Image 1 (cartoon, rainbow, N blue to C red):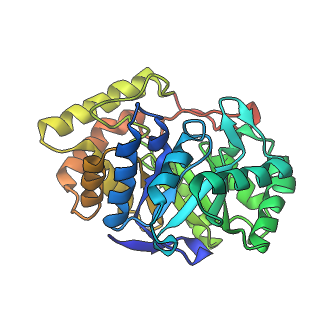
Image 2 (cartoon, rainbow, N blue to C red; image 1 turned 120 degrees about the vertical axis):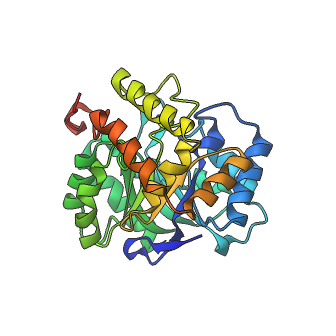
Length: 317
């Protein structure tokens, strides 16, 4: 396993992190014992960064993760969770709710300290509240030694950039972006120099575009357009014909970008997490990569957006 510094946090994180949304059954129903074994397998194979949220599976992800981490030395992993989003349409970034959320997460996870606490999907929030109320509340938790570092997450890229620009210097230490640095969408790349210049660590999530670039395909709730789904299926079919795992290719593509500290992969299958971790250390097939990128060219950087109307990215249809 390779490791990179997460911006100015000083945390040296594994290039593959564990995205624990899978433990909440976000993509499919999972057995708790399988989820626990998957977490333990990831840790045994060198993963040291774990990301979760109370939103995933209505707190199930944090609950199962807490069980998986029992007895694991606390110094052997970095734990990230989130505040602000708790259920479908249940968004509350007030200072009081942030504090209660931190306390609730600690209880579920069985810890008394969170390495990285993030504002979850800020596109659903009033950005004035994020800057003027939520982030200052997290700063107080950081000053009290209850958390180590502060981050923001979201899908629309301009919202991440805007919030970084508006926040007080030194407040935001990490940015988590999902579905915007993949084989079919590298829009995040344009922001990497700016984040690096500020010492902000970048976390990349959903290297397969939330299932878009997998044999199984997207779940029914996926917001991708029919054109995105159809073109992605062509790329996956090409990989299958060449005997190449599209997930392996997607992971290798993401970890090859040195400005991204860690890429989150989610699974509740020990075998899958073993394959994912092995993929990160293997050389990429340049010929297959070029062919797949060519197939995906018609939908390159064509993506979906969401959140409050004023927070949405412009869409390339």
